Image (cartoon, rainbow, N blue to C red; front, side, top):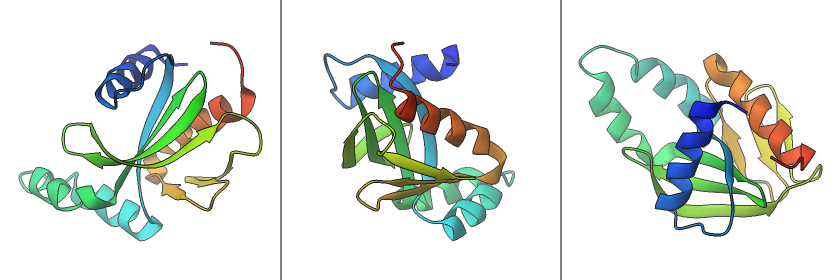
Length: 133
């Protein structure tokens, strides 16, 4: 897994007060496809991107994979974990991936910008493989 995302996942896990688990990877997304597209475009605009990003934080989602679980959080500004929306065991039945969409076993959905769909594949592979990292 990418070293930079592993370090970021480690910081996020510490902020979420997850102990006894090693962070593997992390990905940031949104609660719906429409929001993922709209926010993905608007947040890239010069001068207004940051204020718009702050308006959309209610819809931001973070998927954190550790060596034992995968977590879904509502994200807060500056990559701070908000409410934990889900905690799942690693394994092949935990998540399904269709392009930029992750659907978890309880129906929780996280959409990612099409520009970062490769991160979705990396997260899904990490969850499903249960490989030792």
